[in-house]
Length: 449
Image (tube, helix red, strand yellow):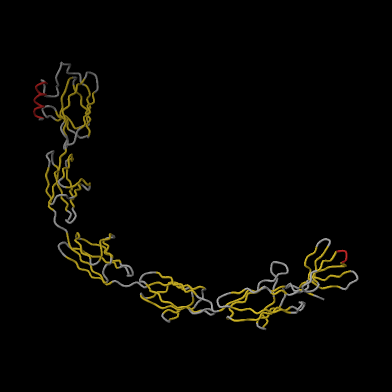
């Protein structure tokens, strides 16, 4: 084709050298012409293949029309016509196009992945067009076959066919476990349960075997092509972690008749299977039961205790009253946040039965009172309050002796006063010489002088 173009151009132009064609001009006139190519380094040739320079360069030519051939290795040749005008500079710019080739890549079997110079291109059979001339590395891979790497050179624009034969890369693996039905993982992917059989590409694999209640097993296996690898594993039972609580806490715990301490207990390591457990605490009935320890599980065992004692909450007024329980001095009532009212006395951990509670005060009328309380197992009883009549005030009427009693309520013009148990009197302020509360000691007890 280039030869035909050369003949046509030669027929059109009378001159084949740089003398050009056109009107004759003075031989003394020369103009500067600069040749620039992209890329640089291209050779500039006349029609007669005379090399006049390697771009970029400058040359002085007579005014005329010229034709040049531009050539560079691995690039398509270019013909360029230009005209040089008198007394004018001329720049000739030429962009070259690289010569490209193509590869037709086939494989046995087909469907292999292809990467050319580490760039993925597709699956065989595959045409890779517009490749610049040069050396290329072709990598092919297919599941179940050994990967291959081939080097080739694209020398010209003519397509190059490459056939690649792939070799089988498959081995077999058989994995068994005791017990069976354990899940099998290869390189982190779940693949099934034991007994497990598979065909794998040759190579190294991370094997994991997992079953509930058993310690995870890890191994590295090497699969060889055309070989079968057999693996048989014994799985180890995990211990069971047991936590024990009781209501109330502080109960002594016995598992399989072995003492383990007082509740709460955390993370006791027990063998898998059935166990008996017993809780004991003073004031409560023993409690026993059985439980099953599942391998690898965290179990919480709760022991509810039922008290074998009872109690009583008794209100005894006023503060400062001495309390006796079955004839033994128990306590003295203390004032509560409410004036004149005692704190509730709490009797606890009392064996079921009947008990005598007595309240006594030296100023009380009568001096003491008693009640019988029935204590029931696991319960707290609340009998009627014990109220003693104890004077808290001193009052004197005109022309009468002083009176000790209980000041019930007082107003600006009258006073309600109890001079003796069961009697409530109203007195006018005009008939009262004086009225004063009795003094109390640090414990709130009334002081009467």
